[in-house]
Image 1 (cartoon, rainbow, N blue to C red):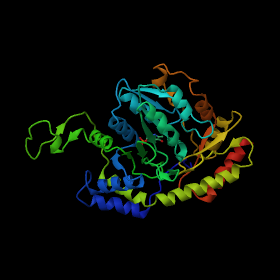
Image 2: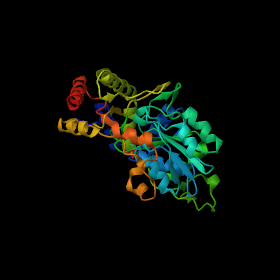
Image 3: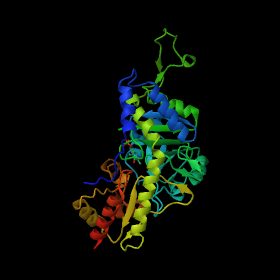
Image 4: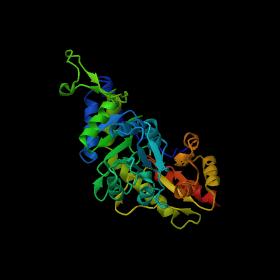
Length: 374
Ligand SMILES: *Cc1c(COP(=O)(O)O)cnc(C)c1O
């Protein structure tokens, strides 16, 4: 089965990992620091904290922003559940705002309708790899003293208005799962513009340990002294994974270029085909296409999905609207709340898209779509 996404691992990537295995530091070592610096540099020059996954990055980001009971987080339903669930786990109330019907990106006007004085974070998702409209979202968030979060699990290396992903929202999170734009196996990162938020996020992902003697609240017990002021978890990325991440970062520009070539090949092939719509790109953005979300019209998505799977093409659907999940439905969230997201979901079909996909394989996917629609 041709997968919808997969990692690209080079001999250099392998050598980078092996070098760590022969060295002194498997975790909390110099490769972690170097990877965090490189991610921070790519993401607008802000502090980056590496984590064990995109999910733990979101949990860490919300904790760093001080999200807790009584707070509201406004987000999109067109995402992986973790964008919402990590805020819920901290005790916040999640409010879903609808998406733009063409791009599936959070609609700033819909955010304005649902947000209140209690809104602490407006969390957008760079769906498929194009940055959401942070230029519009930021002033809306600012009006009630809320922060913006970019779930950039799809978009590392992208830009909007000439600014890199990581510099577009107050806080940004990444995922380095194998299907994403670069991988560390499992992994993620948080980037924060505010040094206080970054420090709080760092401590949360490091068990809450405070090691700066200026901040000690107890009498210093000796060289081993460290304190916990707020609860945290161990969400540390290893040096093994960080070395892979550093090697992958050097290939990100090539990955981006190849992904764009494949998207252009799909766009050209489907431009004149009845029964489908190609992805819509937002003005002013330079995406890193993580997904190719084809829209299959006339209620035929399921049929096309099954025919293509039978053809050995591993198509995927991204995503079931988050509030449909029983955990949210049981809490009283009702279907129909975000009609654009639900309509998008009903038509969406993610075609295979990853750097090592060959032109022949792309053409095979195109033939499979055309055949399935007949
Ligand atoms: C992949 C993904 C996550 C979670 O990342 P993991 O590394 O799988 O935990 C969160 N949000 C979005 C939009 C994602 O695509």
